[in-house]
Image 1 (tube, helix red, strand yellow):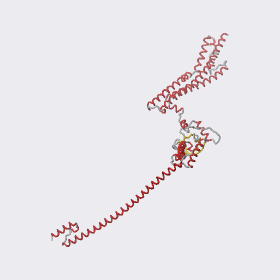
Image 2 (cartoon, rainbow, N blue to C red):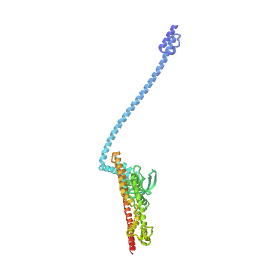
Image 3 (tube, one colour):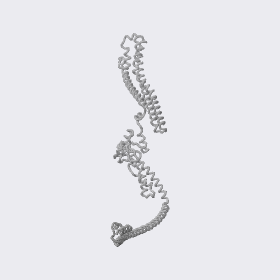
Amino acid sequence: MKRSSILCAALALALGAAPFAARAAESLDDLLQSVKNARAEEQKANDARVAEFEKARDQQAKLLAEALKEREAADAHSTALSKQYDENELQITNLTNMLKQREGNLGEVFGVTKQVAGDVSSALHQSLISAQYPNRSDFLSELAGSKTLPSIAHLEQLWFEMQREMTETGRVARFKTKIVEPEGESHEAEVVRIGPFTAMSEGRYLSYKLDLGTLTVLARQPPSQFTKAAKTLQEAQSGYTRGIVDPARGVLMALYVERPNWIERVQRGEAVNYVIILVGVIGAVLAVWQFLYLIFVRMRVNQQLKTLDRPSTNNPLGRVLSAFRGDASRMEESAEVVELRISEAVLREVPLLERFQAFLRLAVAAGPLLGLIGTVVGMIITFQSITESGSSDPKLMAHGIGTAMIATVLGLGIAIPLLFANAFLATMSRQLVQILDEQSTGLLAETLEKRGA
């Protein structure tokens, strides 16, 4: 019995019947039946797997057939497209040849039209008139880059834009548009345009910015006579008035307003400019002061000439006359002593009449010398800029040359007026001294005559 149990267990392990391995068969019949049942179950599972495999195989075969059918359809479509492409290519070639044959001279017209459209587009894009008629160059740019023949409408529009530009060039137009302030703010304002040359608004001149396509107010405006003319032109409703025209279409105006004024030129110079100005101011003040003094003295002397018998001490002539009249003790002196005393009285008045003339002569001589110093300083700055940059760029040398020239101008500017002022004052003082000499000589003769009597 034990032996049969061991044999059954071994047989179950050999057949792979695990569920029966733990159970001991009571007889060989039971064992045989168990083996049959296990084989039947395994056969059933195998049949199910085989059926599943066959079903999957049939499905794959169906998918393969569908894929082959789609490939064949795609190949057929590709062949049809290739054939149609070849036919279209041939048709395009034939049509192109036919177009060239039928174009004739129109091909040359097409090239000329594109060239003219390109040139006109560039001119209109830079024109000040585009501020009044914006975006008018877009069509011309498209026409210049087109690869098809222009239509009659395109040619008419090209002609219209060219004609409008020529017409507006000779007009003074008034329109409203947005202008940009120097601070960046924009607002709508009335603009007066003189052809493509000048634009102004609210008495201020405008410039046309190509990148923005707008009018901007110049950061620096020209002198008052220019702005006054602009304001007068804007206020005019009819008739004729004076206006400023920039033939360079804004370039000259932009360069003109960038020119520094005299204050800026002096500020850009060195300290010698301030020294020259100080000397000139002092000389001018002293010259004016002495001129007023001599005018006042001349008036008093003229009054004294009318009343020589009543000398007054408020003028040089009166003081010279009163030096001896009324003093009997001096009449007893010798003629030489009397002459010396009269000369002393005259010489006492000369310094006041000729004062400041020495300083004016010094300023006249020192002005050009100080200007020469400024010129030398400017040349030194110029050479330093050339040395530091290693090039002779005019913009780098402009500062030094400007310093040299403004110093020279200032030196001559104070020397020439002070030279004339000094000559005028010297003439006035000599006239007064001559009057004193004449009257003092007459006083001496009168004294001698009294003594002889």
